[in-house]
Image (tube, rainbow, N blue to C red):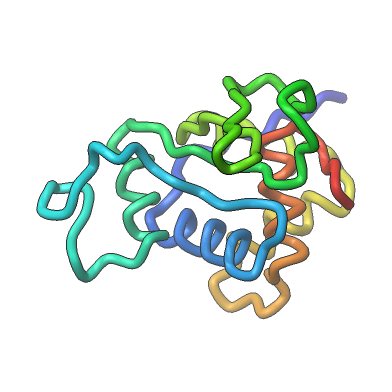
Amino acid sequence: MKVQTIITDITHDDLVNLFATATEGSNIFDVKKKKTDYYGTPLESATDCREDTWAKVLLAGKPVFVYDYCAEDGDEFYGKLPHEWRSKTQAMRYTLTLDDIKKGLERALSSQTYISKYVHDLMDDEAVNFDLTEAEALLQYIVFGEEIYG
């Protein structure tokens, strides 16, 4: 039997929860957007936290950039997302879209491993289990297609 999981909707709050939890205190990841999205545009306001802005950018159909600070050099990359080595930050930069997030979450849910529990924890508004460890693992699964840094 083959089961297919489809993510039909990701909310602003889901994205904020994922990014806030995965990047706050992380030694692996940071997320950035194009510098052309300035304050005062519909995608950004002075009262938004950075995660709100990232969610708005993604929901508007634009990409964000996930920086992998554990990559050792320009030749070390994982997964199939567009990427480039950024020598200034000494990190591999991956281009991430909303569709990439949906596909990554679908793969995670279909994996029938511990990673599927992390998606359920992300979706549960009342969950207290979704923490940095789970969020980093889930973001690795979304960006790399697997958990690399354990």
